Image (cartoon, rainbow, N blue to C red; front, side, top):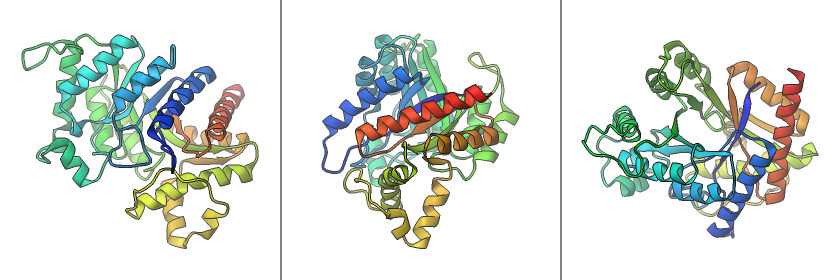
Length: 333
């Protein structure tokens, strides 16, 4: 049966603090570990007041200290924002601190708008066009065989599991060519999932780290013991989606609003319905039904769920219900 993992955007609440967001992240990771999740990932985003994972490796160091055996990693690092050597050093450090537990998902999107991307890189030349070359350079540092003739310290010899992330066929083709596992961002951009997974599986080349395709797909989960409460909890993320698509990034994650979906204009509802096509909103049975559909459609080896919920206790309950739903599917299987 497929595994379950968790993707955390480290939400900063409207009117809340970054410090509180990081404390909650450690608690969520420990909660996932206790529930038997396979891994906990943090996403890199910049210039977004409601998302606290910009310094991804630093957040992971904090999360690693809050857990004992759970795999932790980046979902992902946007490689065009960084020199590969810096990422080798950061994740080599994490591997030294938490041996055998570190994942490194790599994406080519900037994870920010143009001004922030420029501030990170100081130059937009090359950028995502160098993605494959940057991956190979990074692999060289971890292998201790850098093309530049020196050893990355930390980094050389680190046991870091690489994944390629994507929401189109490009990332799928990269993952296939390099023989690496592939994670599709269906939790917010599901449009090309069928084509991407087909391309990945069709063109996969076995490598030293993977002998056959390995697929992870994303799914939003807003679960509660009562379906109406789950719909209410989901309105925080719906507000964030609408604000982002409207170019409004001020403020943190908003409290839920009763009747938010019903009060939206038709175009906004259509946008949300498309973007959140892979979203389970409701009770355990509702979540199990969505997960069953996702697994049947994608044949995924793993589902990584994300749950942007304003109230911390409700968020933990939602995650627990997701775990219960996956256990129910395993029992049925």
